Length: 137
Image (tube, rainbow, N blue to C red; front, side, top):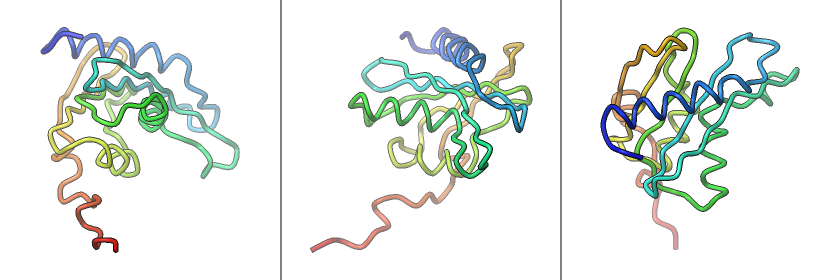
């Protein structure tokens, strides 16, 4: 995938397609995500809700978990498409921080193609990561 605006547009387009597959019968808030790994591979995800609300999962984590299951652990950017250009929730920000650094690009978009770009560090300052844990042994 190329750098710059064409990369952003491609990620947003993939996230928009993933959003169409969302299972959101309770919130009626479909979300799609497309995660760009350092390898250049892109992993898409959509939110999947459950009648037992706590068992639902966000699109961002679906994409990330698919990527990790495929062997990826480093990421460059994620695009998230919602009706309102919502940023990832706190749980998704924390999970992204496990595998991305503060410079991970977070692109939020709406279905009409409007976008805003943040870094993970802007969305989750002073994140809790493995460096905050005591040494083992």
